[in-house]
Structure formats: structure tokens, C-alpha cells
Image (cartoon, rainbow, N blue to C red; front, side, top):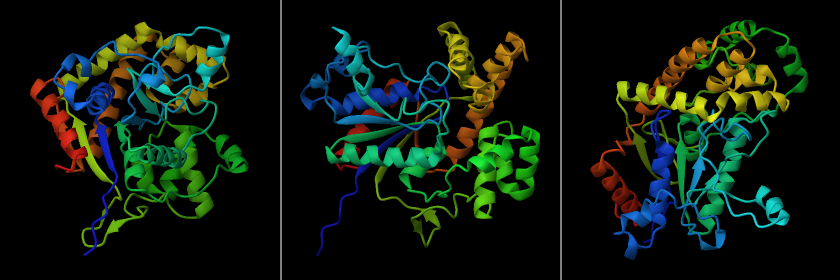
Amino acid sequence: MSTPVKKPKIIVILGPTASGKSELAVKIAKYLSTPSQIKSNKSLIFEKNSNSSDENSRNFSAEIISADSRQVYKGLDIGSGKVPRDKPKIKNQKSKLQLKNQSYFYKGIKHHLLDVVSPKKTFTVAQYQKLAKKTLQKIFKKKGIPIICGGAGFYIDTLIYDYQLPAVPPQPKLRKQLEKKSTEELFKKLQKLDPRRAKNIDKYNRRRLIRALEIILITNKPVPSLNNISVNQNKNQNKPTTTFAVLKIGVKKSTEELKKLINKRLLKRLRQGMISEVKKLHQSGVSWQKLDDLGLEYRYVARYLQKLITKKEMIELLCEEIYRYAKRQMTWFKKDKKIIWINPLVKEDLKRTMLLCEKFIKNKC
């Protein structure tokens, strides 16, 4: 009788924007990376200032892979909610040069798929999938524990279920033709060619509208839905299957709590210099249109900087649009009945989550 093959294990931390996913992922990574004999000392596991940047002293057993469509871009830091890189001690000029190629650590935990491409370039979900798959294999090879963290449900599912995405490279000539059209014209064209995709797309996002039309016009087919792009399907249940053992933890917040968190975070980002960040991106050569395409914070701050809206209007629009985005995220996640929803601010929930993750890694659940 053959021994069943053990599936590689992945932990996924997901939830709506502003819910606290990033910090929870770091806490879990620290817990799983801590030797059993000292786990009873909570201060060692959840040390707020544990930001050592000496790579030789790190434990790499748990690493985080970001699943965010904007955090892949360099320079999109405050507006995208990217965790700040740990600051190593720089002794000399040579150390400064080495820092450019250094891995991305936050609170001592290695992070992947952050700062991988210039915001002037196009970065597709297919490119994300390819890079993330390579990263997974590297972590598995050294017997590490990958923790996927993010709110982009499609990015997460693309990686876990290995969706076969349309192999349509960017078409410069076609793009030039499409770019001559207004955003409204692009959306109307998409409505005509693929009504299903038009219902689910951000109709103000030129980048995504052009990409969708590009796929349709090159393949002569609608943009594939999740029902027909999965590689692995359970024939009996018509559900996607995975070659991984996956534990999904969702961060839940009430409607009122989420609204407060979104508003509070927005004001904090403005204090941190989000407007200056967008101004700097534009000065470095990122067009107003590209900033608009990047959505939410970058869209409305760019419009404010162009004097298309007032600062008050910018803040009001952002609060509304970010909450709408959070609702769309939850609509996606609610379809997945395997997600275990927790509130990490409740001590018992957090404790149970840590133990659940540990049992999962040790094949006890």
C-alpha cells in the first residue's frame, strides 16, 4: 500500500482593507519561527521593537508573501499600506550599495513580492502568479512556512489554485489605439464585447479596461471567468482544487468598526505624507493617468494635486471608495466557506489562531 504524498503547507491571512492583516501575519510568523521552549515567553514572540536586521541571526522558518496588486510597485508605500522595511545599521558606503539588493524584512520577518517593479511599468496578475510560484518553491525548498497575506482575493486564488491565465503579452500597437479613447468609451466597448467582465471591473480604471479589451481583441473571446480558467477542477463538485494543504484565516470586523478603521487610517496616512508621496511619484515620471489607474489613494490624491477636487472632497471620496472596496473584498471572501474568521484584537481568538496554525504545521489538524 503506497504512502500518501504530503502536500506542501500554506497559511493564508486575508480580509478587507484596514482590518490588520499585515500585523497578524507577522505575529503568526514570529510565533511559528520561535523555538518551542521559549514560546511561553510572550514578550519574545510579540516584541514590538524586534526589528533586528542582521540576516545571520534570523530564523527563516516562516516567510510572508504579499498578495496585493499595488504593493508590488516601488515607491507606492504610504498609500498602499506597505509595511516599512527594517532599517539595518549602515556602517559605510559599501553597506549602502548592498542595502539596495537586500531582502525585504519587517519586524524581523522576511517579506516577498514587495517593491518588485517600477510604477511606470505594467504588472499583471499573471506576472504576480509567476513570481509568487517561484517564491513558494524557494521557501518549500528550505523547508520554510509560506504565509500569504493580502486582500486581493483573485491574486490569492490564482496562486493557490494555479489558474491558467490568458497568455496575452502587452500589445503596444493595440494599446496606442485604445489609449486614444476616453475612459467612458473604453468601458462602453467592454460592455459590448464582454458584459460579464464589465459588471465586475472598476469602470474608472483605464489600465484594467485596456488590459481586458486587449485580451478580448487578441483571443477573440471574453475574458475567462474563474469557472473556466482553473487548471484543477473537482469533477464531482465543479470546484477548484489545489496541490497544497491550505489554512485560511480571515480577519473580521463589523461594518461600523471597519468604517472607523478606514477613516482613522486615511487621516494617519495623510499625516505621514501620502500627498507628498504621490507628488514625488509624478515628479519622477509617473503620469497622472497612471496614478489614476492605480486607484483609491493614488487616484484621488492625484486629482486633488491637479486641482480637480478640493482636499475636503478628496477625503470624503476616499472614505466612501475605500469602504466600497472593502465591501467588494468581503463579497469575494464570503464565497469561500473554508475561511476561519477571527478577531485578532480578542486575546482568546488570537491565542486559538496561533495554536491552530501550529497544529496545522505539525499535521495535527
